[in-house]
Structures are given as structure tokens and as C-alpha cells.
Length: 202
Ligand SMILES: [Zn+2]
Image (cartoon, rainbow, N blue to C red; front, side, top):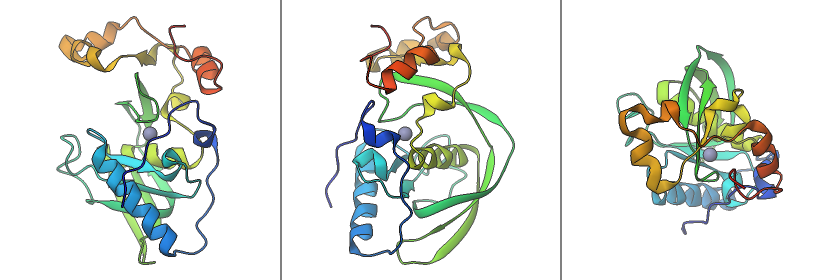
């Protein structure tokens, strides 16, 4: 199945609350496959949610097994239909980015361990407990199903940074990110996500 284009801010679909899947039919199988293919196409991507390819249904995929942060602690490829977190514990801050929010990165607080239930594409009900990087990736993708992107989870104006792709080596070099001066305040982000500003530096 084809790789789908990723919608980017301020696309209105990214702000939509996604609907529960009522019946797992062929269209859902196709959607799951599109999400898997699109995730594998994205450089370093560890997850994609349906709304990112324009479908407002509660479906997302996550696979952190090839990522250095997740390779030792993961459930492989997760294809999740109607995922629901039933418990969460712990708190950690991790730097996040998103294919729908290019050129930004920020520190987001997340639970370090979550238990969630979801349906597999074959209809099987499954419950897993995820921790560490995999738990973060799942929470990030599930936020998309509620119309949220990671900058909305950031509560500190200092913690959303504007970093162009070719600046990342510099950003990571000797923890330069600690003093990165290209910041995006939450006020600016509010304007960006509503489409009133095209990027943080305008
Ligand atoms: Zn994302």
C-alpha cells in the first residue's frame, strides 16, 4: 500500500478529535498498512497516527525497535485500533519532535510507564504495559488522536526550540541545546497552530 503524505501544522485535521473505529473492515486494514508504510518511509520515525495522513479515526502505529532509545525494551510493531491508556505512572522529560511539526523540538513531560488496551487489525483485544521510550512514543501518537501535538504539552516557554534540519548537528553538539536561543513561546505556538503565523521567527 502506498506511503501517504504527512500533514503538517496548521492543517485543521491535526486538531480534530478522532472517532472510535466501530468495525474493523478492509478500509481499516488498508489504513493500518498505509500507516506502517508511511512510518517506515519517514527518516527515524517511530510512529504515525491516522490524523497525520488525513483520516480522523483512532488508529496509530508505533515501532521503536530500530531506535537506539527503544531497541532493548519494546513490543515490536504495534498496530493499535482504539487504544486506551488504563494506567500511567512515573514522570520523565524527553526531547520530542514530530513529522507534522517540522523544525521544532521540545522537552515534554510524559508518564514513564503505561498500561494500554487496543484492538489488533484481526480484532484481537490486547493489553500491554510499555515503559521508557516506547511509552513516550505511544503517548505522543495517542495525543494525535485527541488533536494534540507535542508543543501543546509543553508548559515552559523555554522548552520549545526552533531548529532547522541542517542545524541539528550543531544543536546536539556539546549540549548546545541547553542554551539554544531560537525559542518558540507558547504564545507564538498558539498563533502558528491557528495558522496566523507561518513560523516562529516571523
Ligand atoms: Zn507526532
